[in-house]
Length: 137
Image 1 (cartoon, rainbow, N blue to C red):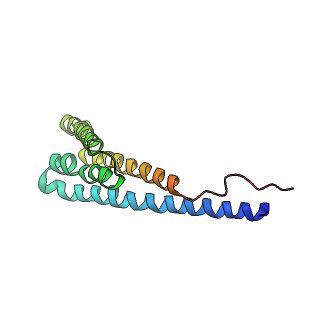
Image 2: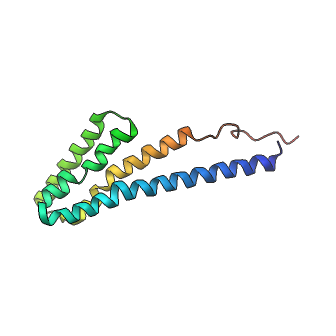
Image 3: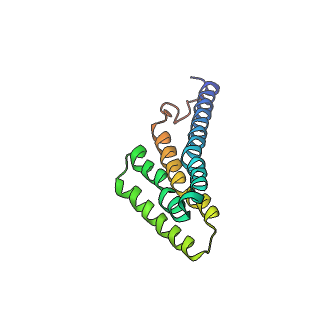
């Protein structure tokens, strides 16, 4: 295999990997960050900020972590409990407006899902056969 063919193959594999990770990240952010946050903001006037932002808010992302990423349920529940405690303190004290808090805290489970997905893609992506350059003798 010539060096230029090997290099082109590597470039194509890296490009596909980057596109795949970018698309997966965009999908996760839409499904597990933007949609739940908009749902919370719409639900808040009817159900109250505590129910909308604290109870409903992180449940979608925190339940998706063990379901989709095949990690222990206690990890998703621990993240949910930690975020709920932080949100309860911040909303209860009035330190942060509830609408702003929703956008910030919903990002945490989405970023965890992005990290897990990127790791899963990188582990399973076929970079075999391109690890070392061919000899140019």
